[in-house]
Length: 181
Image 1 (cartoon, rainbow, N blue to C red):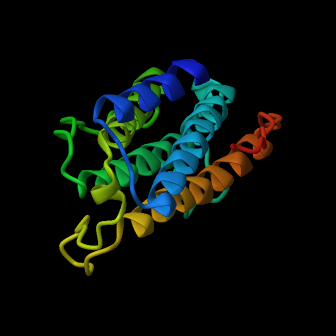
Image 2: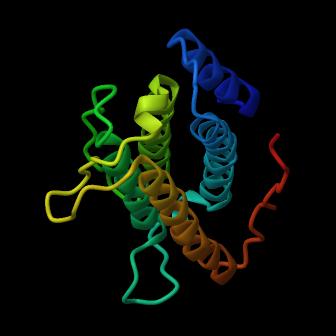
């Protein structure tokens, strides 16, 4: 989905929810996060698309996950983080063969579609929550913790994945850093 389409869909979803915020921080934070999440989605998919299908099993180091496994991990973790909001039913996603570029891309897109659907349902109350359990072994997190965790986790693994491109002598796509009002 094109950037404007994703952002427009998320904005329309929030408006349809009657997202009137009294807390200016919650409103500004969600708006900013959604804009940056759209950038994250686009860049992650651009990085995925840059890797040829025959290189999805490549690793920068034998102890690491393969390129395809890293992408599956990134999407699975985001689903876990956003599932904790319990705003939309999570997709039934079984990780595909990590060597299959088309299947991995579909899994990653479905993961972003899920997080986008959750973000589109957000209300002020959701943004201010402090009781989100995304893992039974961890204490409850705030919504802001979840947003930052998902964003940082995605950036962390995407940074690793860029190394996989470089090891395979592939120039990574350029990150577009644009301010969001």
